[in-house]
Amino acid sequence: MIVNFINKKVLPNFKIFFINKDKKNLKYHNISSNSEIKKNILNSLSKRNFNGKLGQICHIDTITNNEPQNFIFIGIGDENKLESFNFEYFGGLLQPYLETLQYKEISFQVGGLKKVKISNENIILHLASGIYLKSYSFKKYKKKDEENNKKVSSVSFVVSNPGKFRKLFVNFQAIAEGVFFSRDLLHEPPNILNPVSLASRAKELTKLNVKVGILDEKKMKKLGMGALLGVGMGSANPSRLITLEWNGNPSSKSPAIGLVGKGVTFDTGGYSLKTSGMEEMKMDMGGSAVVLGVIKALALRKSKSNVVGVIGSVENMVSANAQRPSDIVKSMSGQTIEVLNTDAEGRLVLADALWYCQEKYNVKKMINFATLTGAIIAALGNFYAGLFSNSDKLSDDLTKSGRKTDEKVWRFPLGKEYDELLNCDIADVKNITGTGGAGSITAAQFLKRFVKKDVEWAHLDIAGVTWLDKDQPLSKKGGTAFGVRLIDNYIYNNHEKK
Ligand code: BES
Ligand code: ZN
Ligand code: ZN
Image (cartoon, rainbow, N blue to C red; front, side):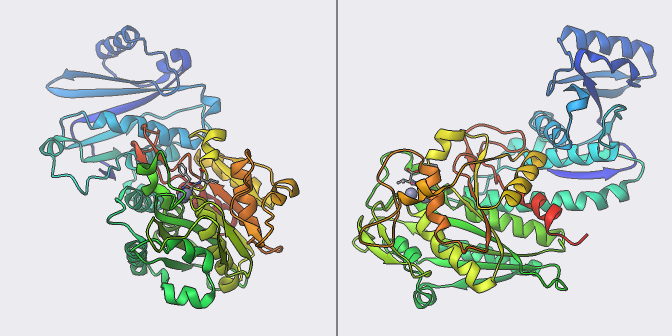
């Protein structure tokens, strides 16, 4: 779906009005100068029980003087509680409805709001962004649908200064393209997306002036990445470490911020074979999809920040060469790990990816993303990502960005008691505790053993939010790319030269 800004309406034209609870602001709106039409519309709204409740949508169409007239009323509830993301959500609510209309092209006029702290300009931009984000679907492997030719493929907002809007929308569009890149990768099936092809997809970002590096198994072996390589041993597809460098603020002397992603392109569990849910495990590269999506967004909007990405990519399979439960591997950090459960593979991959990120780029701040534990779904369901961090400041900043973008995070504790559960008699650390409970925290404690003392670090466990079986406000069912908008906002607020 194309979203544009124009200064002359094209037909059919849809007038959008935001109505607060109990329809209190309805009378202020200039719905129509024709009192007959106005009366009919108000009647229709009442008949359909439209009461301005948050998220309620009502479309009314009439014809006057041979011209179709379309009115869309969107309930906004209590206008004092509205944030800008709410207007993105309204766009996301509206978009599936647009797909049911039998027009190719439509235009919108947005009725202003008086008592809201968000400017009309921002209302329109967020509405447009929401429509655009929600319009994504992955149809690469489906034959062309005839029906699609009749659906709305272009929406234009009628504004007096379209040039200004187009300019401002560039940033929204950049973030959306990052989100779409991330969603594309999530949807690819695992017979197509493996560590090698993921690395080729990452290479596409070279076009946008991102420096992309790929380490093959030979190079990783030389660096001592026994933890990552152990996971990939059972796969016919060789493992890869992917690095990305976005250098948007070359004059800065401080080290870049590091983003590290779990890129397990398929997780069978290995010899600790999964007994359920294996068919969902193509999304186990969700962490890497966040890193790639964020870097693409930063590059497209030419963010004045310095960010490096490191992705550990492996396929966790079963074969005669696969790792066994009880193998001991040596990580790049020098610590040895007893692999008691081959299904706790994400932490093994991240152990080497995190260490490499610190050694190679000397980062002092590092955020990692991983579909790491089923336990985080037990704790938070599909509504929050788990946040684990050694820094209150970083946690607060991420929580704030989570609220702003509505990609919410919830902080969990870390502590000595949990860490001790990972102590191992015959290696430096074991990859599972063997005792029940706190599975997401002990996974985070494992990662923390590979984070240097002077590095501010946060781990986001996104296992519950990366892939959803239901439509969401800004995505259709499937890959959400949760984390891209959140981290883009975090970098914009905390690491960007303005
Ligand atoms: N990739 C899974 C976690 C996962 C589960 C992601 C559900 C998305 C949805 C991870 O590698 C895993 O298997 N974790 C184990 C850890 C356990 C063996 C300690 C888990 O959560 O059961
Ligand atoms: Zn696993
Ligand atoms: Zn996994």
